[in-house]
Length: 390
Image (tube, rainbow, N blue to C red; front, side, top):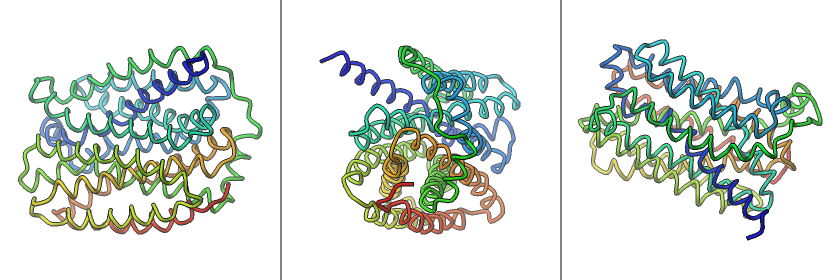
């Protein structure tokens, strides 16, 4: 291979390893909720903040990412993101409630920066293979989430690490990502913006298409983060063991990987993406109705189907950022706006879901909320799926 081909292969590997790190700090919490509650005495509503706080950080800091790239460059900002992720993961190990939530906020800022930067990096380096590379790194996101869901309880109880180190062990993978990414700093230069942050936000704010993408990102993320926070607890309440409940969440994340590999690659070849949206929403509603059944029969099928739909929707959300923009600068701007608005919306999900359960004492009403969100996702996805540019 030529030096340029080698460079791009190494960049794809770096992108994939970074993506592998952007979900475990959150998805690893769900299977451990019962253990954390027993150790800390926190309510379900407060425990929901362990998922809500990072997502809220996504919403606040996503739109600020251009301020970092103009000073530090894209590669430099990604380095900062990985350092924050590593630091936040380690801080959560300290045996106190303040470090638990402080570390969660810090790693949330790091993940927010990484979330925004990846679509722009892919758009700039792989403009003709955006759908393929998007599928690769969104699949890596799903793999990281699935593995974290599957190993959290075994690491905590089986290996005896306890829930803090079961979450903190992911610092090893974050450090590896930082080492793999550092060679990219050779190409780092500060980003020269064609227009100011306020100007770009004003322009995007007048675009119905941009709002469609942003709200679709938010609704997809709201469902995803609520599922990874509460699905194990739902199943445990119905009599399933913690190990098996964590495995069900891992199945959800695993089939999500399949969705993120298949759906973006297929949808990218279409002029409009409305058919994929319609299929995914229909299957998602079927899976939620299945999960409403208190009987555990076929729960594996419903979990797998839900995961496929969430993974496919996530892949589409990332794909929209690239397909609806003409260049990497515009992709970064739309990525920042859509993830800021989207994740701020998504941040309400886990705590709201836990609060509805605390009020009603059951899971039927919280699960029905997912059906309403799926229908809203169809409406916004119909707008985002237009063959237009923002």
